[in-house]
Length: 109
Length: 113
Image (cartoon, rainbow over the protein chains, first blue to last red):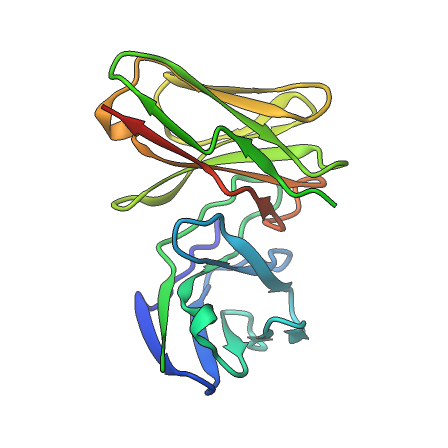
């Protein structure tokens, strides 16, 4: 079970890039890294996932280190609507999907 | 394409009662997972169902149970409600076990008084 570690909170100025780190040093070779976010009182929303290569979609970019022990979620131009709790998970194949406490990102005007 | 639908959105129950929550997954999704979210404990995994079978289970007492129907709709039941069961209950669906590639519903807010 790949345990992930994230800082409990971060601030980011509106319009700047938000870089959210995640440590997953015990990840196995076939375990993907997933990122979700949860805006207050709503269900979590899938953002992006990756295995080895960097990934980008319309919401964010995911940078995974070559040794796969850590990753960074990048929101290129943070807005106030990006204020949320961000979860990084690396669930083992076909096992229960466990969420940690995540990082509470505050985007400051 | 309709998302994951959870009903009801809000519920108030009395201690000792039982409650049933419903989740309709995205059409074609066969895996349904349930989570409990409280301010103090965060997102806690309850169970996952796939093709009407419970595939994974979290560390909750036997008062928490669930089932999945042939159309992939799922229900969870909590018997003998306690004040501590007050929480947001979230359902998530995926095609198969997608390693976490879930779509979540908006949740059912249960308040036990």
